[in-house]
Structure formats: C-alpha cells, structure tokens
Image (tube, rainbow over all chains, first blue to last red):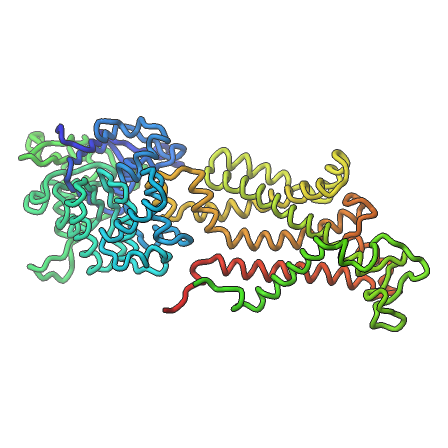
Length: 328
Length: 282
C-alpha cells in the first residue's frame, strides 16, 4: 500500500466515564489512497464523527485518550505537536461539517472567513487572499461571488452555506477532505447538488475524501470503498460494489435491508433489533452478537478477528473456519 | 447597510447625553461660571433661580458653604466619568481575561480561577475596599483599580458561562479545523459573539461605578475631600433634604441622566453591532 495517503492503524479512543475508561473507538484500522473516496457508515454513536475528530487532532487531550497511529503521508499525526497540527489542519487536511447553518461565525462576512483561512496558511497579501477567496466561491459555483463576499452567513441559504464551507475547506488545496455528514442537514435536491460538487472538486483538485454518513445512498453515489463501523470497530471494509452485492457481515446485511428500495414495496422497513450498546457496557466477544440473528455461542465467547474473504475484510465468525467446528 | 444612529431616537438621546457629560468633564475649567471651591457664606443655601429667593447668579443655587452648585456639578463630572470609564475598562479587561481562560480551557485552570472568584465574591465589596485603601492609601487610581478589579472578577463568571456556550458552537470547531490558534479563536471568534453581553455589562458597570465612587467618597475612602464629585455632593446634601429638599436633586439628576444616557447608548450599540439586526430588504 505505497499509494496510501492516510493509514489509520489500531486507532483507539478512550474516554473517562464514571464507569471507568470506555473505548468509544476500538482498534480501528483503514486506509485512504490518493484520489480515493472512502465512505464510513454506521449508526449514530458508532464512532464515525469521533474518528474524524481524532484524525484532525481536535479531541481535547484532557478528556480523550487517543492511541494507535494515524499515518498521513508517512508521518504519524498522533505524534505531532499542537503547532505542527495547526499547520496541517486546513492546509493538508480539511473538514466540512454536518450543520452548515451553524458552521459559519455569524459575526463575520463570508469573505472575511474565507480570507482568514487563506491568510493563515498561504502567507499572501490581503489583496491576493481576496482574489483567491473570490476564485474559491466561483469554484463552488456560487453566483455573483463579489457580492457574496460582503454578506453575512444568515443571509445565505443552507445549501449556499455548505458551499461556502466547502470553499473554506478547500481554499488551501488540501490533500484530504473529511466530510462529516455533509448533506445530512440539507434537503434532498440540495444534497444531490452538494454531492455532485464534491465529486467534481475531487477530480479538479485531485484530493482524497473521507465521506462519513449514515446514509448508504450517499455512500453508494460517492465512495470507492466503504468501512462499516459498529460500536467503535470496523466490522466490514470493502469496495463499493461488493458491499451492495455481497455484504458479508450480518450488521451490513441488516443495514442494507433497513433501507427503502424502489423494487420491492414493503409495508414496513426491516429493522435491526435493539440499539448500539453504550461504550462502557460493551458485550464480551463479538460486539454485535447481542443483536445478531445468526449468533452462536462462539460469538459471545471470543471476539472475531478481521478476516479476509475474497478481498473483503470482515469481522465475523460466520466466515471463519471455526464457525462449523462449533456447530451444535 | 448598517442601521445608522439617525433611525434610533433613543440611541441619539443616549449619545447626546454621554457626549455632553464628556464635554463638561473635559472643559470644566472654562465652562463653569464659578470656581467650584469658592465659598461665599453670605449666599449659602440659595435655591435655584426659578424658585422663590433664587437668582440667575447661581442658576442651580448654592450649597451650605455658598459654593455654586452648577460649577460643582460640572467639575464633579470629571471624577465620575474618569472612575466609571476607567473602572469599567479595568473590569472588562479582568473579566475577559479570567473568564476566557476559565471558559475556554476548562479543567484545572477553570477550577482555580472560579474558586478565586468565589473567594473575592464572598467578601463584601466595601470591606474589601476599606482593607485595600488602608493598605495602599486612598485616591482615584486606587478606587479605579479596586472597584474595576472586583467587578471584573464578578464579570468573569458571566463571561465564562457565555464562552462555554459559544465554544461548543460548530463554527468554533470549524475554525479550529482550519488550523487557527487558541488566541485567535478566543479574541476573533468567541469574543465578538458575546459582544452584546459585554456591552450590557459595561453599561451597567459604568452606571454602577458612579454609585460606588459616591459610597466610597461618603466613607472618606475615595477622592480627596476638596475634589467635588456627584456622589459626595449627594451624601453631603442628604442631611439637608428636610430643610432644603431641592438641594439633593441636582447631583442625583446628574447621576441619573448620565446612567440613562450610557444605558441608551449601550443599547443602541448592541443592536448596531449585531449583524442579524442589520438586515435590509433589497
């Protein structure tokens, strides 16, 4: 994997809770190659957003204990000082957020906020920064950018604000963009526009994207590869076609069944029984076995490793040779 | 387009009052008709011009030593404005510093600062002021420092709370995610968002400090005895209120009008600085 831009290895994030240390992310590993879009899917609370914050180094060290390694271009981000991380954030790795309505500071104009990031990293004059800011607004297809520069965030619609956020995030030509549920707060037509925009910009600026979403539809449209997360672990990771054609993990299968499709008419959508357990009361063995329709004694007894089946990574006993040994 | 002063009648009134008081404070030596310290015992306790027995020689009358009240009020604006403006500046500086460190960084710094605030707040202000004045001596500068500092400590708690709220907003995380440093985030991104609270606190504080000066001067802990101040006049005239009821009205009125002016102006300033209230329909 020499062409990997980002290699996350055994990433673990622990929080201090009244019940002791709880691992919200547990030995998570995945790679992002240059120019690739990796989707991270999972339910609320499975650690998707936490993963993005850990990569950006935005977790307060007083609260969160981060271990493992995050290699970005060969350098371990977890070993960088605060100052070094500041140079990376916004410049090499950028991030866009779920809530475009609150992601812009209400007291400054769009132009001011765009220029701030450029001035922070590029060492250019205000005039050049202004020109670059206008170019960025053009790049994200915002009409009459000169006029927009002088407007305040509340004068823009949600879709426009998300475009501005993208413009800010990309203003220093980062190598990687982390999009944390970028379309969740937008309505469906705007969603499609933003996704198209992201795909277009990815080609133009040749960057990698980590697309975090709970929406398999968004992932299907954008990602090259997918990591399915459950309770802070990657339970399945594979390319985009396999995940829809041959989901191996029962959790992934459950997620796919729980989604409305055009082909079949169902009165009710299927659900996965139960909910994600709290990180301080995770079950022993496979974290999913309490909700798994195929659960066997081995699942509760021992935690499965990440197995490779036809090039797909899956963390489930079903695909191990032990599965049939323990057949009752 | 920002909302200009012209569209706000109350803001204009406030600004006019504040400017008038500042004008008095700056030009007191030239515009006051008499020397504020000049005594004329023959003309003592004259009522204002429009009452029976008054004359236009002393438009607002004279006090128990025959000093011209108008001149004393004009000169009194100096000390009052100095203490209220400088004291508020000290208070805001202390409050913002302690409050933002405490609110933004949290953890141990927060615990230490907030316990310190608790300690300061548990002292009655006057007791603290007596203690400090006893140690470092009376004087205008000392009043400014002690009053500004204790109010600032008080403000720190409110500012901390406001910062805790703003700190969690997504735009703060967004600005961190593009690599801004802590100082920039606090000064440029958090403080402007609590500006309305700061303005309200500052205007209340300016008004409060005018009163603080008068109570300290009343206790003899404040400015030197010969310097006229509104608060001191008010407390001197307090004993005469039964025999000459008009006498305490003027320093009281000066304090009230100034406080009102500051509050009206602050109110307008808060609206003016809020981009959301400056929308114009195009």
